[in-house]
Length: 428
Image (cartoon, rainbow, N blue to C red; front, side, top):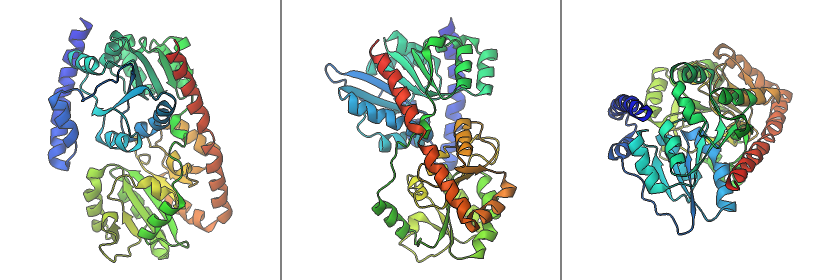
């Protein structure tokens, strides 16, 4: 009876999701790859090696995929006979998985959570382990994995107060899923209490810390950083701000706030990288309407533009820019809808970070950053004055850079604890 009503709910969700993705595909060119794969309902091409065990890693979007990289690297190094398949929920997650976790046996989008469809995927993949990242909870994915004999592990787990309330109030039957996890690795004690309240046995919950703190992507070679700076025409005396992972409304607000700072000195440079690639054209039109002189990263070398603002219209370059930035501003945090992004990407590269007051999805990262004074939390109307102070106060700048180094050192413990839990799971 549970499965029947659950499938009806997923059917309604699927109709709404397919309609939304079709509209976004027509309007913005999004979801082209995902839509075609989801409509086919076809499991990935995958053949298990004789005698090999299989682990299915499921991540959500870009941030969760990057957090999975150190675990993937450990699996490849210490379990060479393990076949790894990776599913993601978003297209940016899929691109990141193929780039940052090469060598997996298959990459695919997670199908809609129908019991019959997940069963079809399970029959094809037959995983020995299902490793899920953070907070993408799907009942049939977990329950069917258990029915096929897999051990299910949640890594870097978190659950927001709103999600906890909704599950407890409107979907108590989802507790069946939470009792099915073999191990749950959570970011902090607060999340541990919520998972326990939803049915996870206490002995299966381990507080491991936040894997996003771990510097899985080591600093790029100096030659790479130098060539990128040269490509961007940035010299050693330029003051560089990189604004990353911005969302709608944030670009206009931040560009307006920093307009005076840019006009003060031609040596002030700004690099802007919107979160979603389908918004590149939208942001370019916005800058034209604001009469901001800019250049496109994809056009560098084709034109002689020396504009102070560079619009990153290419994916995969942002972290490289954090390498030589003086200050980073991370979006998704200046308006309430998103809840923040991974502010540790610049911190891990020794770059102080500025972010807004809406960091409810990244509470651990925010608290650790502020604890070590590696960054600052400010509303939009205080951004301009902070930037002025930062570039005129050398001791302040150096103190924050030192804070970045101290904060980055926290990450190795979270990886170690998570890896210990996985090893225990393989030995039981």
